[in-house]
Image (cartoon, rainbow, N blue to C red):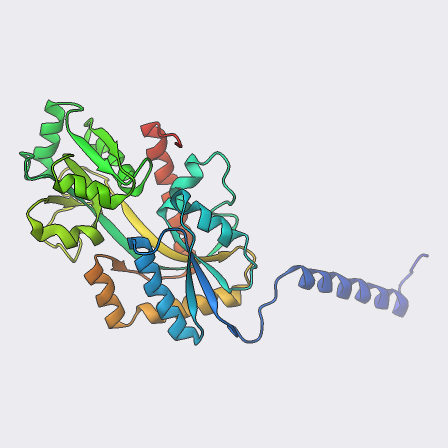
Length: 332
């Protein structure tokens, strides 16, 4: 049938346009008029009691208060956070399943896992940041170095003699030390442990020489006399230890190692829900008592837009990939 114009053609064209718009609308997730109307869950890819879990629980508590519905923490440990991240990526994009993102699952695993069940950029939509924490470069008191420059001189004089502990292959503090070796031009011997706590215990016992330890656990042991802090891993000094210089200040130019925490949802989640979660998260974290609690724990409270978290993940993914390639690390 040929349409030559007039009312019939106009009606037919309008019908096609309506059909096309209806199909597009049907293909896109539509946010409910009210959100949330039931409890939410926050997937944490690490065991309960660790630094990542503790900070995620603070974020969950604040979201619960702001949203008026419980945000229950669901610990799914394993594979450096990757197991929890895969569960989060496959959840329904309705805003009721959140993922606590961190460096391990979003910056490290994508470069090491041969078969990863998610893409950190394609399968997630960022909501917002909630924390970051530095590492502290610690040495055993028997090591004759009271500054980073003295430690570097000692390591260069005896390549490979000094050893360092970590929470395991490609863990955050392992990568922090690999970056230090690369930028400082030194060679150390890696001694991996099954977690950060055993590594710190070994350092305090003098079984290893040095370690990059999370600020959160370092603060609990500083007065023991069994560790000596030399510097922090961030670009600026930590408010908890203002007297301690950064690695960059100490001559290791360009050094930066931070473990971040943020909330993400499945990629197809409607933007209106993302914005609702972002506003609630930022409002909760802005409270002075919450900020003081995070600082007392050794973390830096953060906030920001979904886009800022997305850019952070992209930067960290690229930076960590270079460290892993330069160090020749492989998955165990």
